[in-house]
Length: 402
Length: 83
Image 1 (cartoon, chains in turn yellow, green):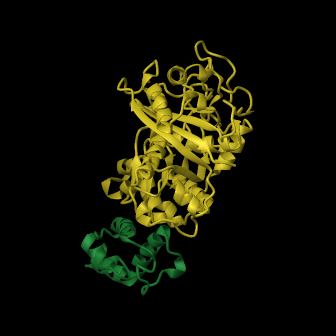
Image 2 (cartoon, rainbow over the protein chains, first blue to last red):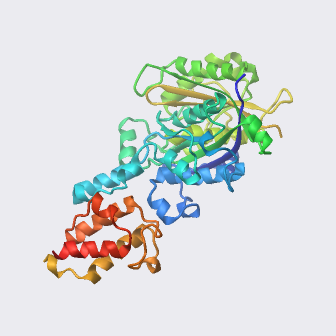
């Protein structure tokens, strides 16, 4: 029997504000953090957590990760040091693009001032593993640490793989999540060139009028621990990673397979990994990007994997409140999911009003709703994430006993 | 032109560059070691870039590795800039 993995701390930096509870409470209240067609972390100030020197040595995506991590570790009670051998604690951090702001700024310097003016910090700031490396160095995590890069599935892949590392005994605890800061001229123009971004500036997943996603930025970080060790040290258990699965569409560079067969296989895989049936699921935190293609194929995937049960449970998208955080999305959504489960609430898909043909699940329109539980156990959710390249990653999460 | 560089000019450029990176102004003196200022090889690479731009002096890895104090750096830069 494999080792169980519990969540003992969460942190988030999102367009709804600083902190995981801020995300959860504001989203549940129906607040949207999107302004002028972008999800910007306007409240973010790196110097609340790190020195000016540390901030200089970190791209914005790494700064987000550090601040979210500080919150998660404080909640886990690790502020005064790690309760495990340093070599038994690692860090997997997802990102879609990494330090693209650093890349763009240095490219500008290269063009304007020549190669000798390009910063020696350019490479260590822009590399996709910079966030994971920064957390490892700052907190002395000496176990396996690396970046995970799978576009918009990266955050979910990171959390899932981190859970695996604990399950199989490669680590006793992992700091994991995802981070993204790609609201830059190049990244924005590039997504616009793909016609992926909403031209009306509205994120309304699953709605008939949806016309693309809204770019957002931020980070989500979770502290995962082996269950017996966490309980032995008296940690507060927020929830558990019951299952995880990942598949690939092998279909198209950007478009999901229309029937969602790869996504459905990942959803089934996560259920199987958790030892559960579709009827055990109380809530789905959807990928729900607000693009015409994703929301249709994801709906198909949920129906294929969950059968009739898909119609009976709330399915809502965090992206309706904060936009699409790309490589951070899966991790931020895992944070949002675990807090929603703890409060027994399904937050709404903000802006959802007009049903689209064939998109006929319960997308939680209007406002948040209490989760209806048929038995005494803490509620269970699936959180799915899909990335360009055909990557599918699904987490099965359960709230801790209250 | 290189011979017009003064010790004061070098000090100002180097102190400005270091202050930009991390140490506070009152920490910056000749005797201060880079170790106690928490200035590492990446920081010195940044300082070297500024120095090269200002004085046309190139400092490479070996030069920088042997620098222990701020004074060491100021002396080396001044020597290169005026020779």
